Amino acid sequence: MIRKEGCPECGSKNNVAVWEDGGKHCFSPGCTYHVHSDQSSTEASNYVKPKRALEMNGVVAAIDSRRLSVKTCRKFGVTVEYDTAGKISYTNFPYCNIETGKPTAAKRKDVNDKDNQRWSGNREGIGLFGQQTCSGRGKYITITEGEEDALAVSEMFDNRWDVVSIKDGAGSAARDIKANLEFLEGYDNVILCFDNDDAGHKATNESKELFSPNKCKIVTLPRKDAGEMLENRETKAFTSSWWDAKVYAPDGIVPISETWGAILKYRDTPSTPYPWDFLNEYLLGQRMQEIVIWAADTGIGKSQAMREIQAHLIETTDARVGCLMLEESIAKTTLGWMSFAAGRPLHKELDKVTEEELKGYWDQVTKGDRYVLLDHKGWQNNIDTLKARIRYMAKALDCKYIVLDHLHIALSSVAGASGDWSGIDELMTEFRSLVHELDICLHLVSHTSGDRNLRGSKGIGKLADAVIFLERDKHHENPEMANITSVVVDKNRFVGDVGTAGYLRYDKFTGRMTPCAAPEDFSSEDAF
Picture 1 (cartoon, rainbow, N blue to C red):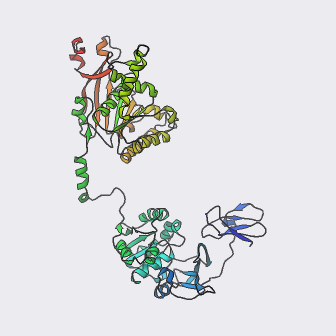
Picture 2: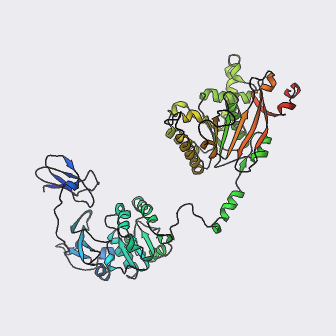
Picture 3: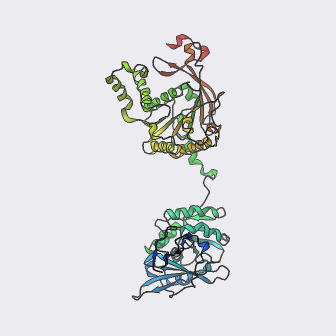
């Protein structure tokens, strides 16, 4: 061997041996990286790794730098090697065969270089580190991420409770626990005490569901690991964290005795009224974490209804409103709100409105910078990008209400949307999760396929909190009747009431939708 180098497969810094003929091999446990002298890579299954005889050199002694007593080291069979200056240079950790209880493998660690470690002996049939010291039954056993942490835990409990460590760091946690699950299940309580870092948290998440119900407990450490706490003389703090370890319970399982807080939160859920009283009588307003579907055929006035809701939210709340109006430009969307300020539809007379007058309406609409729009160039016809934009609006710009108009333009980017509607169901499921994650109210505009059917999939309506159909006879011979829209609540998860909530009349002179009488009671006098 001429040198050592890092491994491109497992990431070790110096576990790859490089020979004179160009051959390479990584000696990290579990790594398959190997390069023949002809530079062709192959897996370790095609390479017979030379066996290293069991090496357990040195003597049993205290490791003062880690505050580990000779008593603890003797219990686990750990030995140390000294350099010429009389300082500990290497530690040796024995691993024993499960059947015989005798050491058949060992891990040798350089105390000055944590990445410099090697195995010796035969690893076949070995258990967890320290398993030979355990009874295999009892009240408690603690599992740590490394050998030194196992020694530290045992030290801090004066060697009273059984402690073991996984073999190869956080990445081997689930695999090592599965291989020794029958042994671990012999204890009443299995305490996971992995490092307080990303790798340790991942190892905990991968391991916690392997055990029988109510058996696994998880320690939350105030420092990185148990060894660090012992070195800092924080035995009391560690034992307190250990005794406070929480029993792992799968997400979503809640005893009814723990629901009082949820009841109070539900009771106090704030709601924001809609612009129209008749709709509030049915839905009791709009709330965070709700999805409201607004459905209608083409040209019925869905976008106009959304403008009414957006403007009402700006007038009656302090929240910002995110507006993803995918059918129109940001200029046309903004002009719609400016028409509200002007009291007339400005898009019909732009050539007659002076720039100064137009700027005055624009100033009214942009006051407070409360509307947040999506420029189509920022969407790029990609669902993941669209979700990211919604998340940014909610988290970075504090938009509590989001309007997406309309859903089917967004759905057009779902693979197979014209026939395989499973993608739509998946998207709605993601939206369902998104409103809970962001604590927002999401209004989705949807097309229909006739007879109050949402186009594409029943999953659109199933995952919504409310479904509202907007219906009108836009070809009615009476122009006034043609501008009356029925507002039908088809789903109402919060209250339950469904049916025709009321009617809206579009005034072409003001550009607004306002409540009106039912069509059969409507006369031309009601228009004034």
